[in-house]
Image (tube, rainbow, N blue to C red; front, side, top):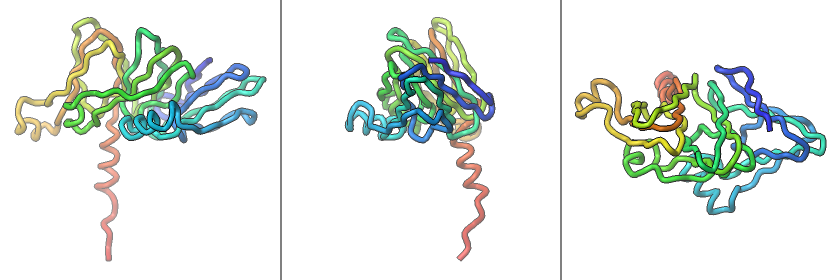
Length: 227
């Protein structure tokens, strides 16, 4: 399968070029356009319990869309909900990927999407205790809000990332949630609450914009209701 990225980095679209009878699975509602002879099917991947686990705990849709090419092959375009970049990561049995909720777009059929417990401190930090885990073999397409930064952390190298700017990281990377400042007063003054501390080796992906900020911006600028 070939993945072509267009209109990046601001309004990215991922096009999957499918061989005859080849299939790809995607987040529900991500399809933008496709060849007319492709077949779309929505189902709960892995059964009801696994689908509920991925939806409730991982923040993704209950149903996933599977697009299957005809005997002539075909193509399908996927677009994320928020404006920003899209990237491709090659998952292998030796290198699974952990993904923040809302960043998964689509993946080859050889990739299994499940949820993984991110730790109680992650839950307390307001980011949700679970992450999506992509394992197996194949390409995974991820989306982000704004521009995408990819870092290859060396063994023992650390980087601190605001919780809402994390997109994904290789399972070889260690993640710890901590307060941005050493006191509540400093945290209040800086406007930063909790942050992730990542320790290499492995790849780390971040987004340049905070999805929560756009929600708060819209809310602050909504006209006041009048009786």
